[in-house]
Length: 204
Image (cartoon, rainbow, N blue to C red; front, top):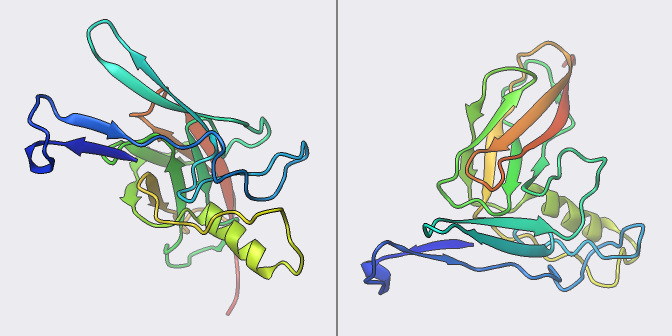
């Protein structure tokens, strides 16, 4: 979580004081389902994977923060060192566009510029929302519906994230699969995450 302090919060220096509360290397205390190597998922309540932060300071005083997940799957383009995406897999062609793609940009400050595009279309801004990361909500539901324990400790109950962005998915494109790309221009480094959704015809 990022914070900016000025005189209203007791900081009288210049410029504003940048506060960052770093996540834990153990994530949510090694909770969640274990992977193939026996390591618990450990995603934190705001959807951030366990890992560590790094700060790079330039000689002129400029600095940049970055988050480094402890583990990354090389076969999942929707989960990068910078962000993780969540989107519905299939929508009805022509339906009201009430569903969206979510991007949890782990180190992004509230004023970060996060954009998405469909296929090779134009980049469009995403809107920052303070709500639970749907990726973790999905894990919570799986735990609730399981008839036996899925791990030693359950994943934490999803809490509102301060670094979550949403973009409405169009449903007026041709039926079939469509690629979603997301970029966060103000992260270090700027990286691209991708996923897909499919539009299907349906009759009432």
